[in-house]
Length: 267
Image (cartoon, rainbow, N blue to C red; front, side, top):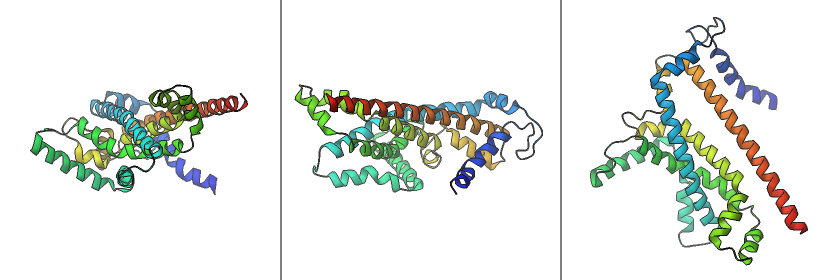
């Protein structure tokens, strides 16, 4: 059953990659091997501009989501039961269960209201898309980092502070390296969510800020172009390499963490 499940998941991707080398303009009619669609893809200025915009938004979104998500998870895990903790936790995780349509519509109304009241933002574009993506990506990062923080042996942090380290220095020199794998996982998750978003970006985007999913969706409605297959193949390649790098980084960090714990336990 596991093999059948993996085939069900990955066979469509293999078919897509296979037809990205199709010489025919018809997507499902094989007419020989060709790389012409990759050449035409890189000559398509609209697609390349959309890719560049999506990559920039995804990078800035993932970086900010990691910062806000880590601070939120640290506050929930380390500061115990403070006033408003339940409300803060509920508001932080609400985007996880909120439909994208509701989130996008709410943010659109917010931006329109703010533009009427304070004159900002006058136009919707990359900045409003970035803010919208940070609102829901932070929740995912907070969940991932929070799960890792609960597993951290706090005696190591207490030992560092007993030796004279300030709480801030302990956070950056002990806590951050310990939870580094979860930070990398959260960053990759936020990057992927931003790169994949279509619904929310459609609500808060403006002229000149069309993202890659929006371009792909609008072009697919007029018929699937082989260039889309080539684009999807490159995205699969990049995501696979990023996942492989993330797995290697987390495995290395976990091995170093266990070695440090063993040295700490035997010393």
